[in-house]
Length: 273
Image (cartoon, rainbow, N blue to C red; front, side, top):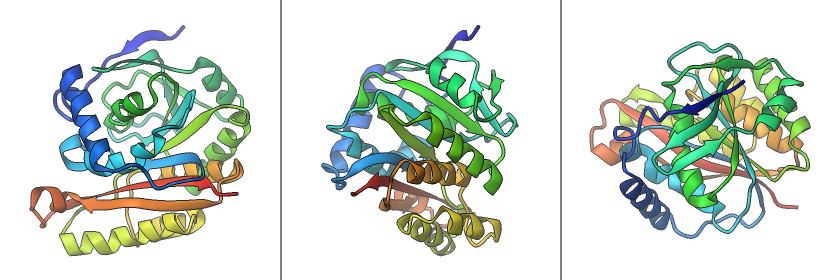
């Protein structure tokens, strides 16, 4: 039986710890991002996972696209930074907590996906890349259930298996796919921009195969490259035919320190036809 609540481990540090301040912060980011650009059927988002003071405004350019749309379920794909959880893992808890409330884990979707690919259950409680997305989802969607997947392996084979599995269990569901990733890490500003341009070009081209080749050849970097590729593969199988980068910045644009920066992008995958 699932445990009860996975308590927040980053409230008060990576993002504000009080419900009022957190809600105000997310709302301000969303207001600054405008009213959205995408007119088609939105299937997937790409959003960064640094602290809100660094990447929150970039993330808002993806999440503002959810305004006026309805999703009952969110599939959130993230890398596991701190602990090896196996190839794929889901939390053993029944709920994720943020200062904005509880998000229920969708046990039915977990079981359906587990019938397609092996899923480890994990008590890992320190991973930020999943949790950091939740307040944006809570503020834009309200109530939803969550399929949270941590990727311990990000090989092309793993991405294909996860993408194919999701494509089999999501038809008929009012579901959104979200991939959590940052881009290059700790290069100087100019080098970071050149590396990140390669990732952005592959996203714009809706080319997960090309992104995999570039990442494997170390022509670019993305700590959540696996989640991005798996999301794109699943979305394509579900009918998506276009992707778009909505915003790019790195930490140097925020802090002014351009010697060791981290890249952030917001993007969407959608169906135009």
